[in-house]
Length: 256
Image (tube, rainbow, N blue to C red; front, side, top):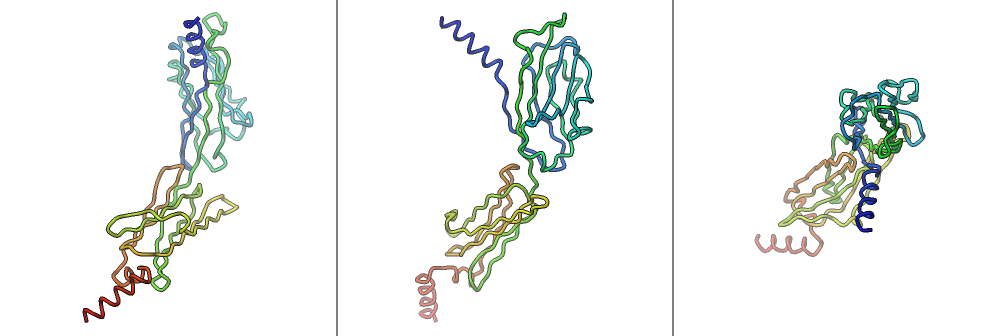
């Protein structure tokens, strides 16, 4: 009984749909990877597969040795290529070019079937979903600006024209470094309704420290932009809490 259960579990694992996330950038070409877990094919005429999105629009269709462009939806026409030289080894991936933000969060499914030499489907490779891929598209933030207002002792960090909405962190440095609590950070992100890109502004009050650093993170690209402002002596003294600033003034008077 135990052996039967193990065999059944392995069959389920072998038949499981591979679920992946693919991150990319607007304007790039991106591979949607998928591989058949089968022995090497001897003839592409024994292979049938197709890719479609969550709306069942076909990206790519291959049937018994031939591409089927007439099945491809106009959204993907002239944008998709496959790797026919590698299909014999089970590579049924496709490459999508001219990625736009309209492709963001799209979910793609690939269905495949393999026939034996006589055209009869093998049971473990009967028509089924092989892979499911979610596409995450980003626009990189190119730069970050950090300014300090000496009168109000506030720091302002801005960046523009990126996607998705960035994650911001602030770091103050003195003898050690520490991140500011998000409750002490005032952040506004505005999305342009025309192109969906974000502009971003974050402000903090500076309390102590010798330098202030703004970190802007793009979660899709896993890229962090960093800007640091080193406080001069006057700024550093102004940034101290009231009681500490009083001690500095008193010490200066005594020294004089």
